[in-house]
Amino acid sequence: NAGVMQNPRHLVRRRGQEARLRCSPMKGHSHVYWYRQLPEEGLKFMVYLQKENIIDESGMPKERFSAEFPKEGPSILRIQQVVRGDSAAYFCASGRRGVRNEQFFGPGTRLTVL
Amino acid sequence: AQTVTQSQPEMSVQEAETVTLSCTYDTSESDYYLFWYKQPPSRQMILVIRQEAYKQQNATENRFSVNFQKAAKSFSLKISDSQLGDAAMYFCASLTQGGSEKLVFGKGTKLTVNP
Image (cartoon, rainbow over all chains, first blue to last red; front, side, top):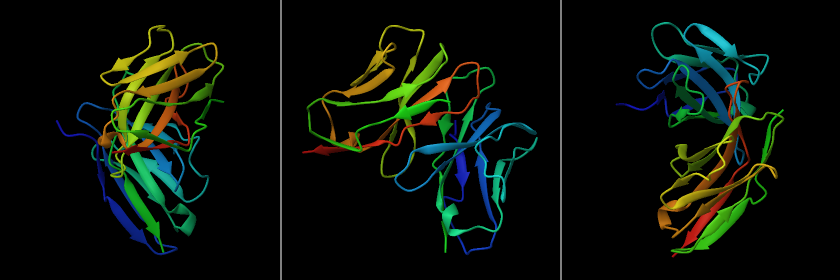
């Protein structure tokens, strides 16, 4: 029973490029959450998605960031025109419908913007 | 809005001793969940223990236990018989029942275990 999968584990981009981060939830999980961890900080919520729906995007920056969770395939967090301040670890977590008190985390993607 | 505060940026403990990590939180909700996560150098977030606010009994998982003081909004983690593998960042987090699904994290406590 594979856990939450994230790829790539490390991603290097130059300023102005696009970054795409992928997250495959655990089998049977239909909820996906994205969090960002800046250096020396705790995790900060970005967005909560269910299949084909964005439920809560209150933590997403207004520009350049978008997320999707299509009917088939992984959830994607997309950052356009990256800047140095986007350098961080991005974590995905998944959960089950109707179970509010558990979120299982993936290993994270460390994004470095040069 | 929910907030979670961890007032100890760093803590250290001798191997086999006991250490307590502090956490306070603020919420206007009556029903919520509290969590402690461990983040070792690999950066994987590992759930250590969770507590449901409506349960008065403190949660326990092997060497890990919590002291949940609902009135004081305090949720400390006690690690007994500390082991070298316990060295990590520890994050306290809350989740409100009936509200958004998002976890709110504290800034973390770095725990060092000395042999």
